[in-house]
Length: 113
Image (cartoon, rainbow, N blue to C red; front, side, top):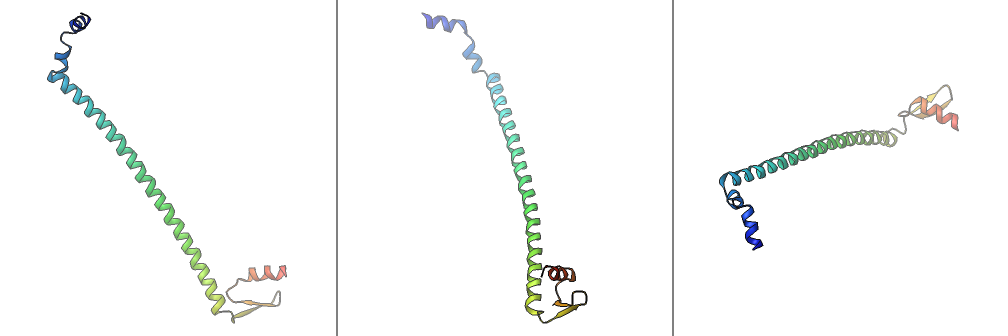
């Protein structure tokens, strides 16, 4: 009896759920939710791409700076190995120093010794 009474409360409920308008509305809601989710995913993806590009630029700069330091080190080592016989005389401290070293560094070394 109770079951019959419940069905009597909403006699058109099942008919409304099966109507084309109701089904269309449900699909429109689903499509809206999917579009919103897609939009959020696209925004998230774009943010990730931007972050990756920024990191790439940062790493490129770090690599360039490292290459500059490496090239300078190579140059100094080359000068030490190949130019060690090229010495200059400093009239102030009356010492000789290697040609690739700056006078300021040499004077500082002279002051320390």
